[in-house]
Amino acid sequence: MSKNNQNNNASSHIVDFLLDATLKKHGVTLDKTKVSETDKETLRDMVSKLRKDVDGVMKSNNEEDETK
Image (cartoon, rainbow, N blue to C red):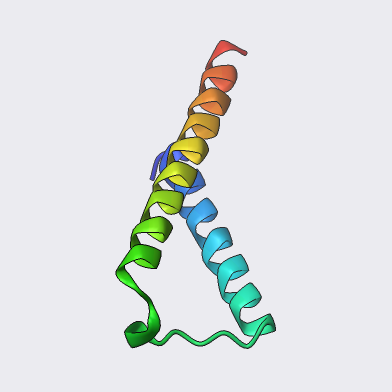
């Protein structure tokens, strides 16, 4: 497994853990019937933007590592 894949995998696990812990802390349960289409689209957009930001940071870190 390449270093980039390991970083993405670790990041994914960290995000999953933090999200799960936060939801549990606040007593949130997922009920698919209560999420409106507007809220779903908003969430999709936020996740997409976060992914782009994380990818940008990861790319920047990889470029810095390669120049060292």
